[in-house]
Length: 143
Ligand code: DQA
Image (tube, rainbow, N blue to C red; front, side, top):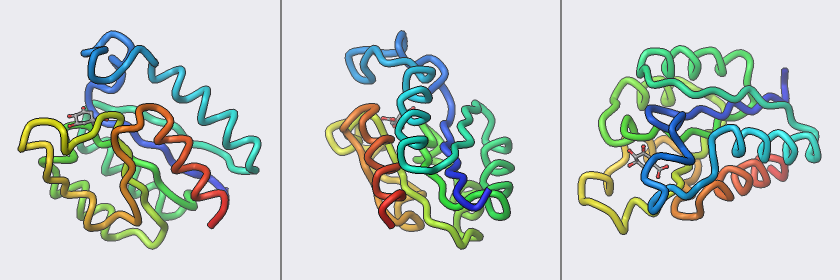
């Protein structure tokens, strides 16, 4: 439990693999989960991996991680750009949070340049596809 990293994925990330593959690639969320699982095991971490299209469900999971998790890796999808509720849930945490995005937000539409999460996160990885999740896990296993 002490070494459990919560990996939280927001809306529409369940469609990865078929959703705008020119932006998000052909890797599915199940592929990302398997990749993270393998990497976590190698580094002695356990994972609690989730996806939800529901903002409230993501808030509940962030709250759950307060007592059950050692860190959070979050790709909040579009809620990144809109959710004060997710920001507040993160501000209530004492564990590190790493924000991940598959695409490079800063090469895209202006509304994606602002994240409510970044100011509360330890770090941000974006634009490196599924590899970003593995890099975040690497960082956590070494810190
Ligand atoms: C995303 C970027 C967001 O702007 C978008 O709404 C997503 C995916 C990414 O991983 O690149 O759903 O978080």
